[in-house]
Length: 514
Image (cartoon, rainbow, N blue to C red; front, side):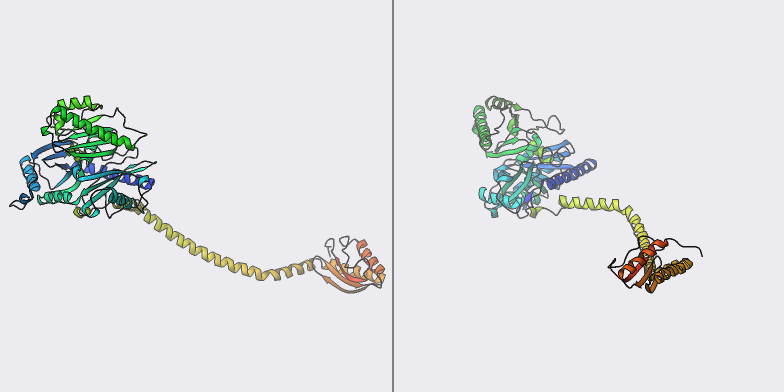
């Protein structure tokens, strides 16, 4: 979509551009189908300084067309008594006589009043956005100052190695005059497009030389890899030239444009096999076309259009109109290939346009509607799941609280349970413990060892004793081991074998029945 001065757009990556291209293709496809079903015709106006060509196309078929001569009036005669500008009056008369009625139209603008540039991304000066960089280049290279010029631009190539932009500057006075005249006639020119862009779209060739010959001007376009690399419009008057002089002049202009292209593409000059397509009013002169075929060095190919039209339509004269109509036609609206984007540069300034949602806004709305449509059936399921989840969470918290209480109770009972277990062991071995005590005291009495205390610890017996010397203490320990009631060897106390006292720990072998 064309970008106007002051509405610079942030640079998009390759992924973001691909998304925009896909969106435009979808929107155009839907629009094309609706227009085809509803039978909405497209009205186009091709206006130059000497004639007005009007054409109506419905879907893929040219329905009506009309032409009228038109001479620019002098300033004093510009506003007739009716108050309608001369151009508006001529358009209204042509519509009335042809039976073509319309409130909206796609209008052309002659390249005589414009300056166009194909700019590569690598050649742009540093700037926050592509729009600001292109504006800076336009201010430096275009003859009209910014306050007297409208600027429009679009991305025309989005290849991986390099992006290309087409920028067009047009005189404010010229475009304002045309728009005001058409609006005064009751026609809304919702699109104003350069004639050269309509020619490229109508010819629809990946590589071509396009020569559009009308009496007031010549359009010369060099198309390479679907990109209009060179766009020139030259004013001329062929009335005083012979056939040979006309052919020679046109050949010279062609050669000059090819040389200009080659000088900027030294490594990839224009292929000599590039076809030459001749259009316009003078293209109906077969002798002139034959001479161009012989002198230009390029083979002239016949004009082949992708629309249906009556055989008696002078198609070469209305090729600009057809190109303008194809802007909205289903035939070319989805053409996005090899990173080349369709030409859709609208020169109409934003001040003349009613508000319409942008492609991004349309895309966002479509996504939101689709999202709600897909997610709405899931709302009930999600709500029910959330309700069940809340119930389970409440139950889990209750169980968790009960578990914590149980843990605390168990922790409080552990010391008591341990004491009960030790007591039970003592009870279980009550008879054996009495015999253990008898043996301990009996052996001590034999050796003269004093037993101070005996302590039962469940699985073991601690004996605190004292002897007169370490030899007796040693004999007492060996005597206890020799009895066979305790696990052997018995761990000696600290300082053994030279200690005379200490604690001897005994572990009974097994419980005895009482």
